[in-house]
Image 1 (spheres, rainbow, N blue to C red):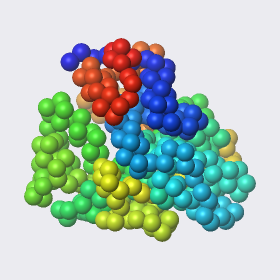
Image 2 (tube, helix red, strand yellow):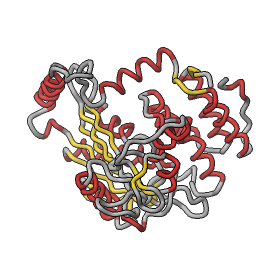
Image 3 (cartoon, helix red, strand yellow):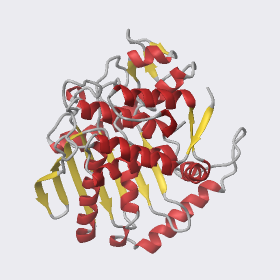
Image 4 (tube, rainbow, N blue to C red):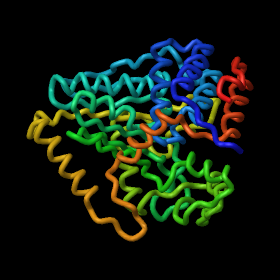
Length: 353
């Protein structure tokens, strides 16, 4: 299939039209499309618009998402909130939760928001980036459907459970660490499967609990934690900071993401922290710049052109994609459009092809 380059402004308008047809309020639709475009522009394609918008459409059509819902504050302390997302749009609930964390941070230097009854919110770094606009450190955690085995196990106990840290720098783009605690996401494995490739050893088990490099068997089976026991430990920490802190679902009790008969109900935790309360934002940024320079000036090992710091490649990719368009195969676009048409939406091939 031919590779296309889709202009991000064109894709934004297309996405807004789709959500408008589903009667999603305009301001909420804007948050969702910006969150998904953030993934598409930064090369996080499994968390981009082509991958996630059809899922949102399916869930709205199935009545699992309340498009007009706002987060509801259940419990308030000077630097912490407990929030009910009320099964609203995933990006909207996450965006509102981080906004509340930022408000608390302005007042006390640190703000934490624990949110339950959530839906999938896309790329975690989109929300941490909100905090960086205020020169705060932004942290995002989310739990997920239990499809990852604990270290040494062969059945799913916890989710891919992402964690994200977005840290402001001085003369460089932000330092961004946005990772799943599994060796790979299911979305990445699905992409490899569509291309006819194999996955690395250590990513997944087949349905019988045996190691596999076959992406189809991996998708039918169980994912493995990143870095063995280390990823396993971090995944449990994420469950503790999300579902447990909110008094909601953890581990095996988190509902299945792709079950269209019941709401999802995962949880998230947003934390905003003001460096001005410590050594000061100027000193902090200078130290982050130093860290970055120590990385990018490090002599590369054989086979590497140079050393990048976390978030740098995504920042460069975003600049390129804004200029040249978002790369996507014609087959993916045709499947994307067909899926939307199958759900009764009025879209034309000429909208994107």
